[in-house]
Image (cartoon, rainbow, N blue to C red; front, side):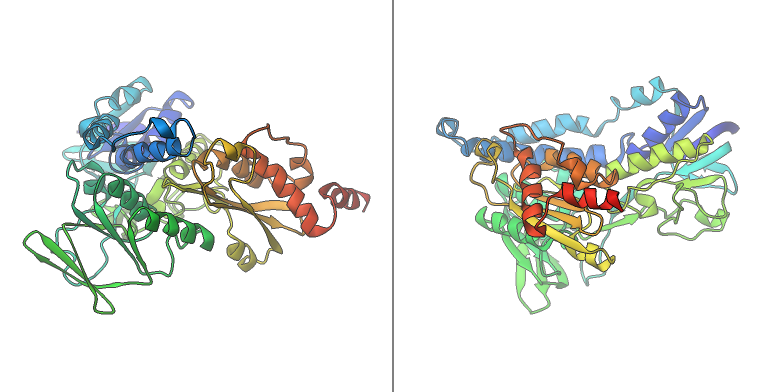
Length: 470
């Protein structure tokens, strides 16, 4: 059966949902969304949400232990069963029954099944053909990447999907990869009783962030009994019964009961029918309107376009693509370095914009101000006594903030102010009038400006006055 819609969306994860609802509610479009698995996607059921449910109990316990008076009330260990029950509540037992009504209330029709592009403006789902008058939007997301290590494919390794949903606490857990998924899952399962080893090929954890971020996180993981190996690459994996053994490049062997592979993501474009519209597999390249070049009817949003593999970036892209489909001159500008990034370990790592090295490689006359994250009056009450560094990266020629990284206990909520300052290009002379409340950790902004003025030997107001006079 063939049916016509204004827009056909492939993939009902966060990006696809936001775009479909915006087109229906704001634009009055007739929209259908196709999903082969769960409405809500990877983030809701296998990634962002369950991982935070696993991490939060131990984080809350550690924070309480930092507070005199509260610390004395603590006794016993985490209730593992209760942690896993709460995780299961968060993911609704891997049932999307609570997600579907939201789509329906937004006026979006849901079709379940595997979608295949079937030529221009056509999407085939089983025996049905959905024809798009305005646009087809691909929002199928990404899946875990499996590197070509001999024996790995046969070893029964877990991806984030198995790791975030299991009710088993592995006695020995081996994590391949020291990026966001690797370090979050290492800390989460160590807190629940696993003996964890992390193997990372690069010379530090979180290699894309400031070097001190990975170093400070490693120190914390070491202190929690997690064995972290950096600069170590796997050469082979072998399974013998219930034992999984990884051989490192230097010949050392590490055995475990479970192996988590967390080395990156790949776009889920296999079996999507891209060849019917002249495209190959892999990442779908798009312009700043999220539009596929030379295909005026085709868009790709979220992980599948490779621009920024973050849920909030996908939702941002969804809003911009929807508005472009509705005829507005909407384009993305902040889904690259401008996208905020958070690692929800303890300490948390929260960053936005450029690192110091990246800024200098981009030709920016960049300086950095480094401060102790807990070095404010507010730090007496949150993250008390915990180590951690905050770095502000400044374009000294323009006196603008171009990057910020916070490492410390529960610093994720500090990030949005930095995101606004960077995206809006707020001059430091203007930031000086944004007075942080006392006693909060936001006074880091005041200490940053004071330190910058000391470093430069003049006030930010003087530089602005000089600029205005010329």
